[in-house]
Length: 149
Length: 149
DNA sequence: CCGATTAGTTAGCCTAGCTAACAGTTAGCA
DNA sequence: TGCTAACTGTTAGCTAGGCTAACTAATCGG
Image (tube, rainbow over all chains, first blue to last red; front, side, top):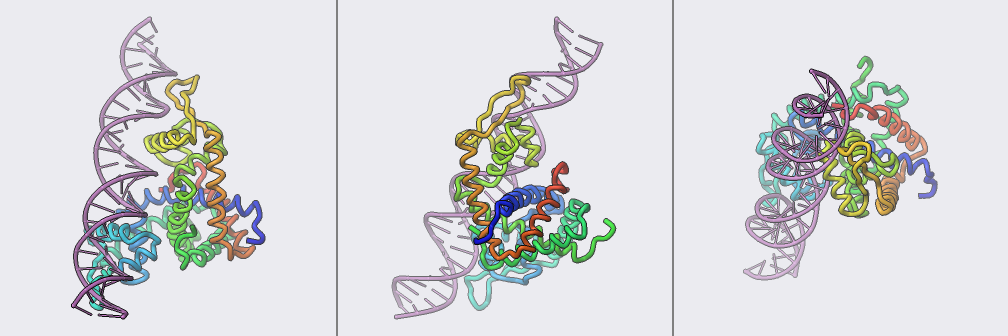
């Protein structure tokens, strides 16, 4: 990293802390909407990314298979996802969002967006643009390289 | 919210998802450095904000007193913080970072910054500026209003 | 056809949230 | 003065989500 300044470091550290605080708040919103963050997140992958195997889903979310296995099991018990063994490989479990799951995701999404939008209500157009830029930066950075560590 | 566009909503939702994924990665870094995210975060408050009561610390971190009580207890067992009852009010517990705690925090901080900086290595100057802007925006938004929900 | 690899699950552990119920301390007021 | 109310933390007990280790079942390659 050739040109990293002290300011960059400070920003990074503050960003990390802010992410923690923000997500703690979001967790409450998610729970009020009917489910938890990781489930919402996994469900979103299924809704927007289509049905996929448990392992792929785990990788997409950056967790280990046992963790995803439990998340899926819980969501399945609530009727949010459906899972069938893949026909071409009987080991794999193909997981898909159910209609109910889709519906709940959208509802939670609305609530989460409302909460975050309320939080960011005072943002100027310049700040909004900055947020969009950061989102693109992070997406680029996080795609592929699952864990930064 | 007068002028919120569809794009804003999409950005917000993506930002939420990215925050989750990023923090999962950071958690691994923190653990490798010797402690967990919430502990690092609370310790940072103590190091940079000075000694304070458990309740204040809990409020600063946006968690309930029992949660902070346990975090403090764990850090105390590891020698990272010291706690004494306040002289002016025997109910209160005054918590301060120990020298060892300060040291570990700085070490973890360095590692976390390294990891995030590596993740953001491809950022352009414009993107770095955007990140700084977003950090300021979030700090402004999150200060005071503990939980957005 | 049998061993090695791969996909998921189960068991068991940890951290971190929460609420409810409790103990101790302070403050206020009759 | 003394009693009650309010406040500060802690303990107990629950849930969720993360992990590793160890297992089962299926596929693949010699």
